Length: 333
Image 1 (cartoon, rainbow, N blue to C red):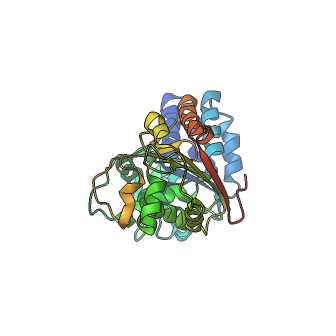
Image 2: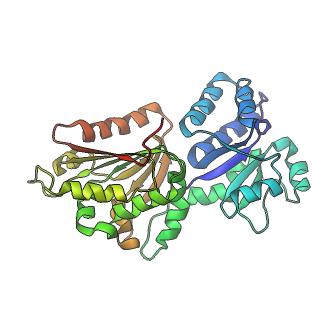
Image 3: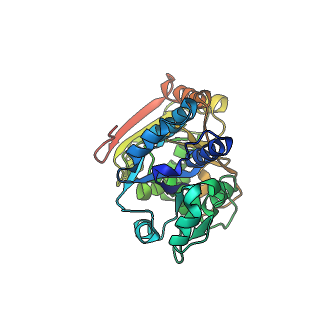
């Protein structure tokens, strides 16, 4: 779902006119929804200095986005295709150039303005004024509300929509009332196993993972199974390449019926995937029945707090059983 978005500080137009303001707002919107921010060495500092010159309310939103989702540095002398394409290779990347210099820059690069893709790559160049019109962003906008259908290529869904989210995530929360009990019955064929394998193969940062589920779909069962440690161990083994922390919160089914009937994945606090069928959508390694898939970004603090409060109810209730495991080298703040 996410894509590296690369630009130098001067791509942010600091003029006070309405067009510059709308351009800044659109760039920030696309970064929040679909971007992994990348800057050349030295440019991130210049960006922070540049942000001090725009209205305070805008600057705060930019700083919050940078703080929440982080910046990644790349070693390159320029934004030329000969520098950028080898960095991202066959992966998608969006390179943003200043609007006022777009025609000249892209012509120099042998590309067409205001947007163009480098031949034989997925590296797309775009003027800052046309970020929301880029092929890369339009594709991700379509994926964000595209249902999962039977016989769709699940590997493609993982590679395009889910893996990129896990690649840079620091926190992942899954709320799915049936995820754990289905894992206990189906093991490697369960949707939870598939999802954790995606995380295991994608994660490039230490990550704190939280799974909120029931220990049994049977309302009469108040205790987890006696051999539960075996299943927790198996879950941990799914994440052998991840550094971080795994927390599993198992509660009674009635708690979920009351508070968390819907199933979702929350990444880095603000990025949400609502899954109609939960991780069961991925069981058996293929899509067996249609399931809704809705990706969105929480922008308001009160929205974030609702999810935090819900997960608090599912982790701090007296009837909850909590299992915590350290993964690899642990979680580093």
